[in-house]
Length: 90
Length: 116
Image (cartoon, rainbow over all chains, first blue to last red; front, top):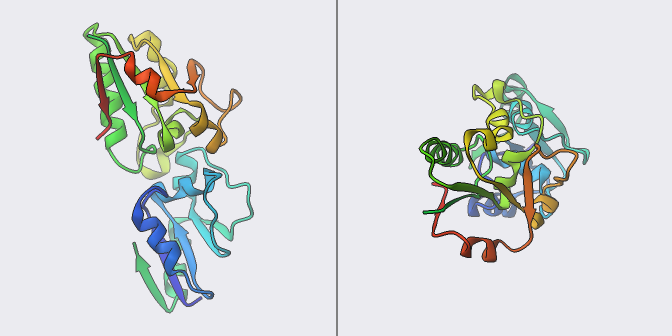
């Protein structure tokens, strides 16, 4: 994985669109906080490699039907940031 | 003086939505006629099965489900937003009235306040 984009803004926020716009082929996106609502929003299309923080999904009663790359816990989140060559926290 | 509080922010990610809920319940506690309208991502406050323990927050699902007991006159939700976020009578908390025209609804209230 080249760049891991960590985003906590809701899809309506301009920074969410900016993040999607910056996504490269080898990049992945990690949804936390309000950003996880993108998985419940039928008007949002997300790129291939998408991770979402489990605690935030459960807080909002969102279970991602589409097959996302994975629900991650806080610990997994740490290892994801280590795997990535570069991390951007939006 | 009939008040409508509009919540358009998703739950738990910021404090704006929760503060507005508290405001509504406080108004109701002082017998001020107040209703709540949820639009855009705000409708997610009304989804059943919220478990925010993992992010150290308390669920508001029970308070919302008991809103009428607390004196909140109505829980309104925008139908289009419910559809967008996959909400229907199976996963919405009970007591929610879905409305189609939020603009017209806003007209019915003397005082309208949007969440933070």
